[in-house]
Length: 261
Image (cartoon, rainbow, N blue to C red):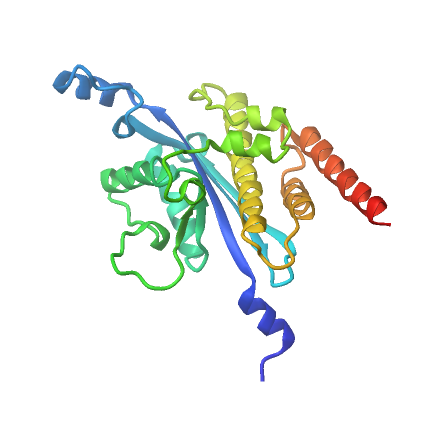
């Protein structure tokens, strides 16, 4: 007979928030322009991966949120696109039982990662392999597509976060960053791509609350995500802003208790 702990572990759900940052490759762009002068530098085919990050978070059957690993890889440490993509693919393979969450990933992140895999002869992790007729849980959840549903309107992640009350300074940090040229800039890129994973996790729990996930409450869930993130990244460049955001959420919860009393 299974124990209560074992039964609970079967229903807990772990997600991997995944984000990637790209730069446009000048040489590829010029080759494309030689064939088609209208080729644009924003085209997916001329972008290369310069950094990726992941952030694990789990929601148990009682709606409690816990956090796991944060991982990030960049060209500073892994030389080039092949090195960066190899590392994130290896990581996802090591956690092939966990679905990845992206925002707009089917339109941008996944195609560029796929192109990198093809270009460098890299085997894709299970979460990114196209398997027609696949049965069971989907290994990749595109939150942007889930929000769009059957409609025509796309909502940017920054717009969603602002509606959720995420402070502007944190949301504004989502703007794309240029390719770094110094160690300090590479560190800023690491902070940027890891923060994007946290913000994506916040948006995902908002979605799950709206979908009626049992026991899941928005403010406590976001606090758990922020505090788990800061335990692993206490030196993050926006740590003070994250702590202030968490403190504000604690205040909202306290006011709710006072009103209920």
